[in-house]
Length: 182
Image (cartoon, rainbow, N blue to C red):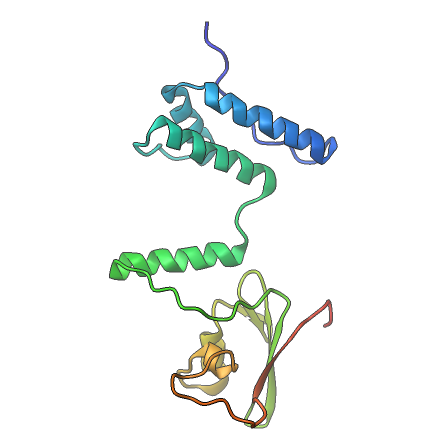
């Protein structure tokens, strides 16, 4: 006799975090009981695509991740955007170069004076807000402001060129924490 192979994502709202976690544990343990055919069916249902040719163990892990993602939310937009950019770079070059650069949290404001005008950029989950638009990168905003190609992080004073020595001069750009201020 065959049992049901359907694993439901957590319902929104409900009986609190403790019951949601016990329900999640139940759903995840049910995955361990499914055979490979049922796991592939579950993959199609949850991920809406044909399953790759993976071992049963990897299918269980991937489906468990998706169940948790549906219950608790997926990756933050900034992380998803970074992963997409890394994937594009890998597809183009066959390698990925990860640079150590400052990570700016959503809500931070970048302030830069350029030709007598002060420009304020707010970091958001979706990218960077400048004026009434959202931009995917600081570089596109720097180009909008100057009319020329600039490195956005460099334009806003977040990085220096190799060989540039720190000076006692005041910085032309600053980063401010934004705590619900408009």
